[in-house]
Length: 276
Image (cartoon, rainbow, N blue to C red; front, top):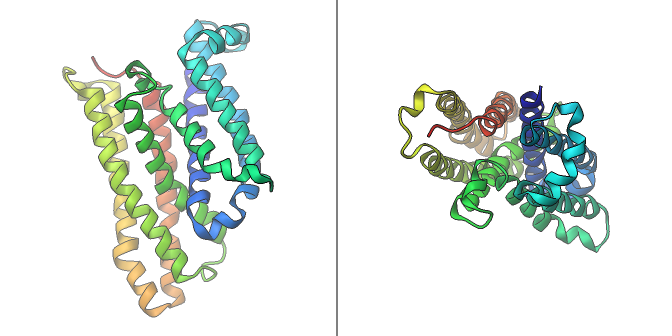
């Protein structure tokens, strides 16, 4: 039960953070992104509490329903608790910044702090809060969020209306995804090398098998994105036909499903001990 709650809360957390990053990056969505994200921020706050409870139960060895008594100790006396507290403060800044006051300018910084703290509470924690490993994993989470989140945000804006987006919106989505894709691959390779370096027969254990499955899904997402960018997008830009718009949008749906599965595997990886 504890493992399931921990993995599920991490999965939802990554999905919601990706959506926030996507709304922040897409110019067409950025105008109303912060106010539109408020319900998602509330859900993120609830999930962040569930994430804390799952980790507290795992660290204290208590059943999930009885782990509340250990929350205070974990939050005030452990590295995870410190990182979670900073992340909670960043979440509060995001919530406040989703209004119309001057604190709106804190939104990108608060989002960056939240992602960095989330990155530093996983397997990276052993390397230290300020470390190359934490920086690389942060880049990986940001890039994955940019790639997946831009797809999520685009679909949420234009679902049910395939002809309602402009050429510039399609080009911007493709450009964001392309740059993010490069960073995902580079940081993912570095992460895998760090986790598996020196391990004996890493592919014969659960962590290695999950990593292989994750890599396979990345290839699927990469293929779908490449088809959209190299085949469909040029047709859309040159002809502007409604058929090209529909095909561009249609390929985003399976890509979004792949990302949902990818985040699920990433959550399971975070809850699985690496080899060695």
